[in-house]
Image (cartoon, rainbow, N blue to C red):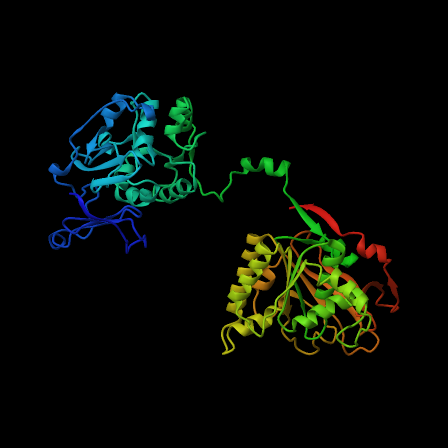
Length: 554
């Protein structure tokens, strides 16, 4: 039965031009392999087509003006073509290759025609594997290729003695064809998948291997793109080797421990860069890409200032590119804070008259071409923000992203009282994936829930259990650092303690360092702080900046 309309859209898979319509109204999609029978015949037949039977074209429509012959351009013998029913003939005045598709009983059900310009045409609907009729009883090994030429090539490499079949419509038809003929496939001890060495072939391999019983699917790897290229390059021995050395298929993300030796002997270097604080560096071994570091504290304790100090350090001492998303303040306030650290003046509190010095400080920090700020205009849409972070990483080569802060972002998603815990779970999961996908380091700020009695603003020690909203914050962060300060103690209100609450990298936790805030300059300097005698001993300046780059193996 010939097609009366081709290149039509398919409602099943969404293809715009892969559907063809037969004279009786039945359709076939050459993208997904879906066949829809004629509406005039469906009332008397089951809605599920027989597993092995297929709609057959009228015999008068098949190409008969064709003969078996050697196909030298493909390196194929005449005997190989004759065994499988692959002929060369003419249709409408053009030379074509004719592949006969037969059911398990040997009855011709369809033909596929290949023209010289690589145009394809089908007479009838090929639903069986090409060559399937030659091996109805099953056996030990079955090789499955993507196309007829490849099946002929593999068969010829084995002197046409062993079972080889091919998919009716390439890799895109693999899943539907395997499902349709699963009973026949289960008659084989091993089903060896020899698909093309490209993305489509690898995808199809994973799809059909999951259909077969565990351990039955094997994967053959070739030194060339497909079996016919091996044949043309006198590499028939490589085809045989690939069959007998085929490995049982397993998902790509499940590794045999024996296969990781090279990774252990040649570990991937994960470059670390330093924090601006010696004590925090010693405990955490610095910042690393593909990690999330969460800073948490009570309200007004100084989380944002700590983040500005880190951003300033990354820009000036490390030379990194930084993306800064401050959702609780304006872009101007963020920029003033970072530039002010360079000048050592709190620019948001007092004017600065020396324009030349200001421009020098600006060019070294916010205006360096390595600092990108997010002007949110009050918009807190999470998906929009994630898109902006991805853009920063992929288009602007941002290495470190500071998100201040998570709680206000989530509150902006649904101000009508949605499930905050669920929203934080979702947001942290997306941030975790984004850090891996874009290979960036994420510094996230989070609030703590209010404790009973004294609050965190009065110097109460932070803890993982106090993270607000969701356990996903602690669970998906690689590092959690508590920021502690007693805002009500007149003698120590300018002393901030950084406490490592979680450390996936080295496992060390506890108080990392103490920082003293200089009100006149806005600078946070690291001090050795003795709780008993209230003495402060500053670190030498070189100690705070001499550890900008470290390399760790992760």
